[in-house]
Length: 246
Image (tube, rainbow, N blue to C red):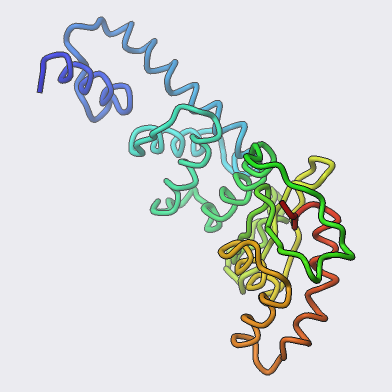
C-alpha cells in the first residue's frame, strides 16, 4: 500500500468513526472535525428528507445514533441522494434492532423509499397509453414506473399514534406513478401479485398467456375464470398508467 493510499484509508476510517479509528497525523484536528461534519451532515440531511415518518418515531438522540451507525458501518458506493436512501434500506436488512428501534423499522423504511424511488425515477423508454378495450389481445408490460412490494406490518398506516408491535399476514401492493405524476399505493391480493409479478419477469405477454400459466398455481380456478377476474383489474391499471404498451 502506498503512503498516499494509506493516508486516504486512515482519513476515511476516521471520518466514518473517530471513536474507533485514529486520526491521520498530518491533518490538524480542527480540520478533520470540519471534514467529518460536512460528510456526516450531508448524509444525515439525505436520510431526514427521505424518511420523514420514520424519523418522527424516534427521539432525536436515537435517530442520530442510527444515522451514525449507518454512516460508520455501511460502505456506500454512490454519493447521490436517491442512492444513499436505497443503501440505508439495504443497511437495515441486516441491522440488529436496538431497544429504541420499532420492530417494523426495515419495512417502513422500504415503504418510504419506494414512494421516493417511484416518484423520482426517470423512464428510460417512452411508454404508450394502452387503450383499455384493446388490453385483452395486446402484449402487456408493467410500467417502468411501477414496482411490487409485500409487508407484514400495515406500513401505510404507521404514525406516531399508531405503531404495531406484532407482524401479521403479508399485505401486497402495486406502487406506481400515474399519468398525473402522483405515486399510487394500491393494495392487491395474492393472485393479483402473482399475475403482475409474472408480467414483470416476462414482459410482453398477453392476458391469455398470463392466466393460462397462472392457472397451474391457482387451482381450482380455470384460465377462463382468471381471465374474467383479471381483465377489469388490468384495464383499470392501464387507465392509470401502471400497465402499458410499447
